[in-house]
Length: 552
Image 1 (cartoon, rainbow, N blue to C red):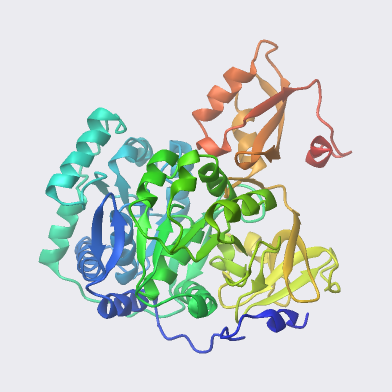
Image 2: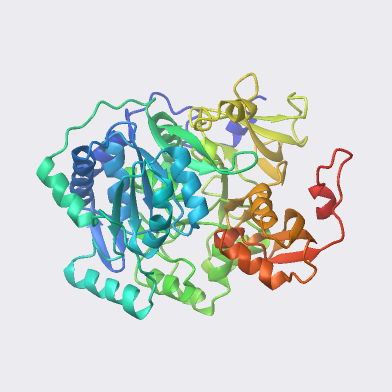
């Protein structure tokens, strides 16, 4: 497909990104810290962390890793919400040459155990609210030998930190009791790293930077291997896209999506760091009144989010009272932005909401809308520089403009495959190197890409992937269940919600009991919201359950 989208590129955005200026993410981060040392890099709970402080603390954490023999290629897991500890440990691990394994802190022990064992993670940093989960999986994860447990307020200063920890532990009672032999605090790790010192390892663009877990096309979560080249390329692509619309060292971006999610990781944590922006960290975006209170304290200029987050803000009457006079960029991704939400956003804020599209496997940005569009256009945007996009039919042949097919992508941001899964890696690539996204869409004559539907059965709940196979496996393990099938159904609150169809073994089994059971095995967004009991399930002649028939 010819790059028809180039005709619609905003002025100043190049067709290609050219040679990369940074040989690793460590180099990218170090350059930013040197250039913007005195500026605020992150804001959390009324405290600030400068670029210089970030540089120092990350260096100390890298030193601790090296003191423990955790070096280049070792997997280090980060299990925390948006707090100062995340970027400190992220950049420290990357500088030490380690491979970062991002973990959703809301994972159940079963989910965490799979990810730790699959990745071979050697060390984990976890906010103490979730230490109990780590404690439960440790006996089953022999490679996981180093545990750093950090209280929420550990890097907020003595007084503020003590107050935050008091509230979290004793007022809100958010820290279940835990006991992990040999666990240390982050402060202890930083002190040890400071004493040990740090020696920068040789790092190159082809070294592995992240194992970012996703379901890929089907099934249980697997680690997309993202190299320094993949992420540096995508940061460079995103930087080229936003450069005409941002001001160096003057932006303040609202970071409500968790930075362990690939969208906020690349867009907020890395791309905006490169231009010397400040990140306003929202530790709990589900607390909408608290979130709005934070917005009222700052003159923010940019914000990223998912449709459900924008919708939740808009439905709180206090949101309309926020000062939006400095807001210039609002970017939605992770799931489709609904027209009604985008229209409502512009009505309340006076600013348009732009949509982007990407995948974990593409680091993630594939397409972004021009940031000077006057209003929402329903498109997922234009392919970013140095990205090839092709719409293919089931035979792998490219279709014409405006025809619907599977969106396929090729570019420097695309993963080489899944960790230790060569067959599944091979299955997602075309012979010519294009990645099959599993999403159906088309390109219009101006080059704008439109998403039509998902080819795969994946369910998208508030921007997070839920895979029917995993839900079905959990439900099928219940002694009262004979058969089960899971699908996604539309939801006003989360885009989609999980619904299961169950053939009972125990006639007394209730919806409430089954959902309660699922809550012990699945992260909240994966838990079915609806249960329909049936006498049988529709199947093919070889016995495969027909999810499509259930959707219909």
